[in-house]
Length: 276
Image (cartoon, rainbow, N blue to C red; front, top):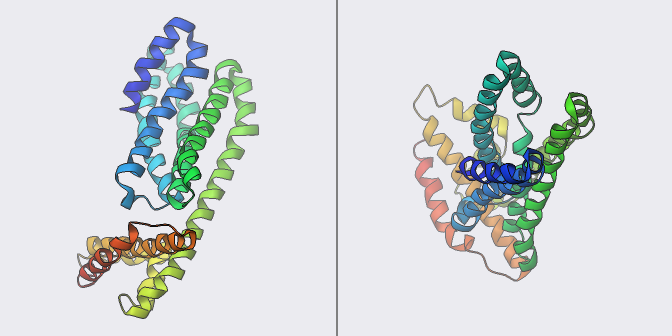
């Protein structure tokens, strides 16, 4: 959907104002708008599936990868038709080898903004952070397209080494940080459920460790329990994050629908617990 919307609008603007304007101005605005809208809709209408910054990065990354996949097919086709196999190889090297992560980084800015909006109980931040994230996405996209459009091969490579790749490393570091932060949050909040007897301490440790969780889940392949184990870990994580949203709401003197989700999530944990 995002590719279709962006393709139509960018084609019209490029025909009127030129391809450079289309690439540097139109593409960042409308591509990030259409991709970001998908993330925003999840935040607004599937709020219980959107717990914070990590979810924002994941949802934005999935949308962006889908967009990039379809867009790359279009670019590869143009390169092959316009410049033959050499054009195709060059485009594949630039888009498929050097920068397959570009769209993910751009749209993740919107995802991070939506994630902060989900976490905070400040009404002003709830409203403005998705907008701030969107403008960050547009800015990064515009810088990238400017480098690619007017710098030539040499300018592109310099911009890639100086700007794009270092920013990619920063983004990866930030993603690791927020994932570790979420695990720390789960270890704190799930202690309540361990004390209540809903889960065991060992199950909590498994749910809060990516390596242990993956190993334990894959261990269910042989006995047919992989699906149940996966759903159990997901339910445990949702339960821990629900407690976190409740504690944040209490600290801010606000309200949260997560309070009503507690008995539902606890029942879901116990249901899957009998099948793991």
